[in-house]
Image 1 (cartoon, helix red, strand yellow):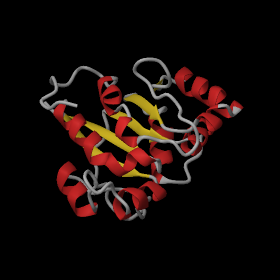
Image 2 (cartoon, rainbow, N blue to C red):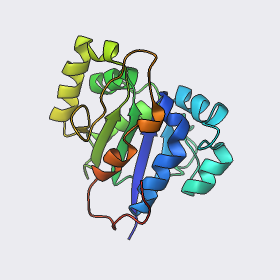
Image 3 (tube, rainbow, N blue to C red):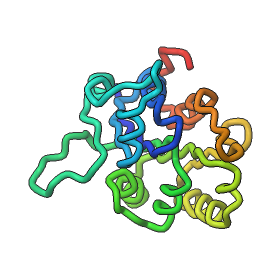
Image 4 (cartoon, rainbow, N blue to C red):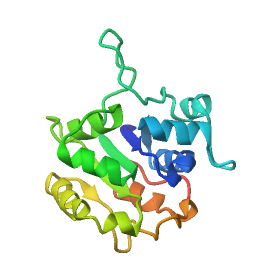
Length: 195
């Protein structure tokens, strides 16, 4: 039985390889819905990785759902099924701080903020991507602690988390997509594809 995963992606270099992360999640049996921040939408769809990137049409075909990046009009119907889990990947410094402070100025941040208060309380996993200069900012420790206190599994540091890099030295090809997918609830089928 398939469960619905909202992949909420921000504008960091790994978003250009979002199709790879979607395929990994699908291999674990997740029905993936993709929600992008406005800048991530531009990065992923206008400037994708030449070998792994896809346009809107291809990502819609890959997921079977429309790619969302902005709020719908009040008169428009919801086009995505309800989420059983959320994966914020890659989570940027900007979105971390907005999310922890309860902002909802974009659909992506609004959904993440709302996820923490839903009655059915879906699982929420976040895999950051920022540099070590941003990581030194006092807001990071404070806001990671706040999100963890609200039940978010923030994968930062250690063996299965993201380790910040020096400014300008991001290596999207080494981003730990598999760790993010593995951190989701295990009540879905075993993986059918490799990482």
